[in-house]
Image (cartoon, rainbow, N blue to C red; front, top):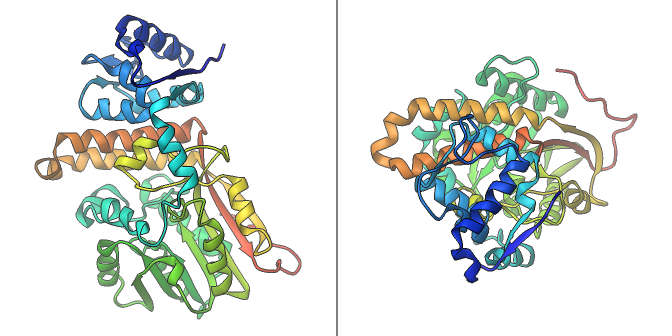
Length: 387
């Protein structure tokens, strides 16, 4: 039986350790998770107060308690897979997070001034750090694992899939909105002979990309997407739309429509959520992606209405599980190089981020979509290329 537990963080009930412990045990049993069990996904409590923090703050409290070493699970990815597959997160509704919910829904937290925060906080963490965690091309988005045997192969397959979906031809002018370290632009310019312009809000990304691809016909701009001008044969946006925010979805597609040639194609690659009316995860918002906001199918549909024709929609969200697990393996292997600088709290924070997200994709709690869009519809229709 599914029940919701809503608590006021200031209530006296939170001091009743035994009562909250029983509720925690009851909820976790629904997900086949035991406190103190001997299976890799079971929860081991190392300090008091964890149930109180969870019922008061949801995943924010759970994540902060993990960062502080108050609880452990040998396989965090499996812990979260079971937790989310059983919808436990939807049964705990902390009253303390009402302000976070209202702020996320009512305010434009991704306006021109705020949009730069995620670049400074997350993507400017250090190019050496990301080079150690990612594939050789430094592709910080979901790989395509259909026929791939390793991370590098999965990322090259994803880049090739995008190029084929866009029907790239030599001499085309391509815009990359949220270009990261330039993996797509470099691949497309090398393999397909196109010219690329990319925009990013990360100074570290721009600096590395300019150096790495200096010999190719590519340009990297430090620029907000709303300021883009020019005309392009193709537009791609891979893993950036999650930072746009529901208040700006329409603006994003208006910019794309303004910049895309009438016979052009837009490929949008984005993580997505299953429910329209949901709130960004408070722990991810505070520690990993400030002001992030996953879109739903309905929100994207509303935003592109009358601007674009949907030619193709491809979901390979399960592949993000394998991608995140590969990043985690690289991160742990490289950690001794960064331990002194970043510290144990950062290690636990990053482990929680990578493995909780892997569990979420494994549970199909979140998705990975690739849209192919045209402005007027392709004559004769669009056929997804096989790869």
